[in-house]
Amino acid sequence: MRGLWNVLACAAGAALALGGSACGDSGSTDGGNGGGGGGDGTGGSTTSTSSGGDAQTPPQGGTAVEAWLAKGDYKNWTCEAAVHEARSPSPHGFNRICSNDVIAGAATGTDDWPEGAAAVKELYASATDADPVGYAVYLKLDADSAGGSNWYWYERVPDDSTAPHDANGVVADGPGSSGPAQTICVGCHAGAGSDTAHTPSPGGRDQVYTPVH
Ligand code: HEC
Image (cartoon, rainbow, N blue to C red):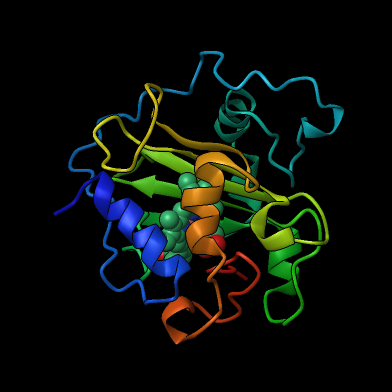
C-alpha cells in the first residue's frame, strides 16, 4: 500500500486535518548510495543574488543546495543525536534533523519563526546506515510565512522512493507558492503544531514540526 498515492493521500489528509496516522515511512528499501551529489543542472536558478546561502542559510535551487549539503555546514547546527524512525505524520522514513541557530534559538517560544529559519533532514534507508540516501531542506524567506508560500522547499529521495520525484530524485525544489513544494510539502507542514496529531515534538509550529534545540 505504499505508493505515490500514499504520499499524496497523506499530504491531503494532513492538510485537511483528518489526522496523519496512516502516513508511514516513504518505503525506500535499500536506497543504495543516493545517487551522488546532483551534478546536473536542473535547478538553474542562479540569477537571484540573495540565494547563495551561507553557513546558516541554505541556497536555493537544486544544484546549489546539493553542493551546499555536500559541504556539510549544517552538521554544525543543532542536530538530533541519532537517526530515528519518522514521527507521525511524517512520510520521511528514518531520518535525523538539524535546526539552524534561528530555529534552535526560538525553539521554546510560541511566535512564528523569524526570517532565516532553516532545517535539514537527512534521510536514511535504515537506522544503522552511515550515510544519508537523500535530504529534505527548507528556509523561511520572509518574517510572514504567508501560509508556507514564503518558504523555500527542497527534497531529494532515492530513485526507488515511492514519493513522486523527477529523474534526479527531486521531489520539490522551489517556493511553497506553487508546484510540489505547495501541494506536497506545505500541504502537510502547514499543519505543524495545529493539534496533537500534528505535534510530534515540543515547540512545533509555523511549518516546523520538530525544532531541535
Ligand atoms: C504528510 C506530512 C509531510 C509531508 C508531505 C512532508 N513532511 Fe516534512 N516533516 C513532516 C513531519 C511530521 C516532520 C517531523 C518528523 C520527525 O520529527 O521525525 C517533518 C520534518 C521535516 C523537516 C525537518 C524539520 C521539521 O520541520 O521537523 C524538513 C526539512 C522537512 N520535513 C521538509 C519537507 C519537504 C521539503 C517536504 C516536501 C518535499 C516535506 N517535508 C513533506 C511531515 C511531512
